[in-house]
Image (cartoon, rainbow, N blue to C red):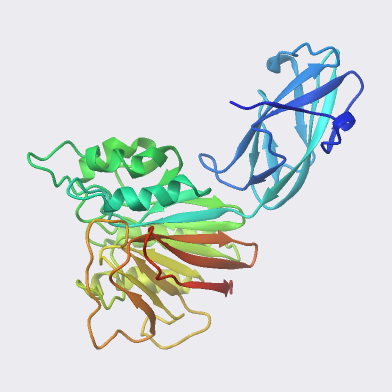
Length: 357
């Protein structure tokens, strides 16, 4: 791991106190916001002017703004939301500080990927290899489609599994739920499979649409959104409420979409249909509504291509059924940017900006 010693003497932008300086590993003074398990981090080590390392457990660490960046008792700095914070370490014989800038978080991913029958999921996984951010999945993570069928996770693990440490998954109807919960562990939030988390200033809700909709999950969703009245929120599920793809719109998701609309959610990201389709903001009855929910179907992880059926569903504005890729979102304090990133050799994309309401 690369380590860089930073101090005022070398013009690095750190602010060493008397008798000390900080080592940063990696040597980043700008990091991306994340949540409790994802996002960039920097390990700080306090050393004396003579180069003697001060044991981390004997250093008192502090952050000037813990809403922006936190620092653990061992000197690990995590970005929480966009802004800047000064991190200071004070030991018996040394002290130093560094200013850390935190940028807006990135959420990137797709649905319908893990297959042992092709390398299309490897192509989309390579897009993640060169991208930062929290990775989402929109269900159907592993199709267990080799002969004989391997254990759940085998097809996924060799591709998207490289990023398992930073994945926030959602379950799909083609996932074996027992295998899904076992493979993803605590990140899957079994046995319910639905959960929420904050990413920068955004609240993210992950639904379990691999099982029939029940009042318990709907009640939880409404209560969760009420308990997190943030300006910006998004949801991730597997089955789309509206779709022009193979499986079409799911009337079974009507109660979810209504709850998202009532809760002021900006976006819902879905899989299931193996295509890309973006809808304009709309109400549950498909009336165009600038304060409604924008739905993006991104079942483009690599399993197979579907098709777009005509006539299109109301408010469908962008469709593609021949390009694998991932959706990248940059989550700002009051807005978001989206970009569909195609696999190598393909040119389809979809780019834009939305405002939170």
